[in-house]
Image (cartoon, rainbow, N blue to C red; front, side):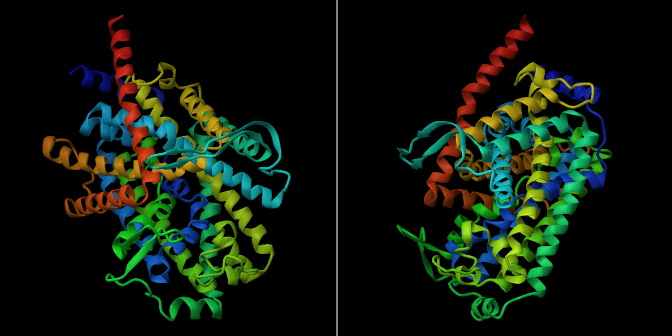
Length: 511
């Protein structure tokens, strides 16, 4: 009862603090803008190296897309039913209990949201260096040194180059700028989001058209002559491909190769964090989740079809041209840049650098805007610093935004952000599984709650997602322990921290 009273007080507080300034278009732009970062331009290289099949490359993207859309359609019910600041944090808190909500918020702050923001900002700085070489990672302003690597039971951690160079200084500057923009209120934040999301969606659509209408004979012959090679269910694949220690089946291979595609398709749930600021949330939240994820997954699939029409999938790591290196060995994994260079020449590198700059900047604006609402909601529940639950005169949770900004900048300095990305997908999928389990639990325990929208395909599609996600998590535990154990440890470290906050909250209430 005390927890329920506390939750109701938090909801009342958010109604007084936050303003409803997001319409349907704005909400769709948050979904699309948060999803499209730099990954779609890069990760197909690593996926190709793992699957060694044009058909399986597309299948990895399609399966990740289907899972994403199923999950988004299911979240629509929870978002329409509980349109409060914090979104998924609230769903977990109210369905499974406050500890699960806290563990989600803890993991988001420690690694998922902040690590993603840091990595996108570094990618932004790296592609800026293509245009302005001054922003080089090798030009150190202050270097503490290199720490690690450390060998642990699940693999190697490090080495990490700790300090400030011109590249991460630019990354930090972009994070600080976008944080400041979002402290000036929702209206300015959503304008930035809408402008950059429209621009980068157009750039991605342009990449699709380029790939579909300007194919090469070499790519058509290499990729479509035997499209489903190495895709038979009876084939056992050496894994990892460079230093194989196992032989795994095709379905398992798809599961372990999906780390990149799942990461590229993630962050669609960020719109739920802003639910308290969405107009007519019972209608606009489910629609934005459906339309936003559907559009991005369609673009992602067509982009990969375009890659396959321009570049051979297999290639030579020592090749001197983009065609010779193929998708698999594209320079620095920059598949999109290689494809555009083949079609329009060397200027393609500049064109793609500009497109990725726009994409990364817009992506981070959405992540920064949305993420702070989680810590704001936690503070309202007395599970985070009290000041994070306050808003400024622009009705923005400025303290929560600043906390998020500071930790993200520390990650940029630490050199750990890239490995944090490896850790986060396992943790992200855990919370998706838990949240959809909460959907089933709420249907059973609280059938009387008004549900303006009911999950499409319930119970079959949510159950299918859970089964597929559990399968992927098991395969990652078996074959990519370096991706899984660190993420699991980070989640579990939140348990004693939760206990500490509960004791502190009780002491404050008693006092």
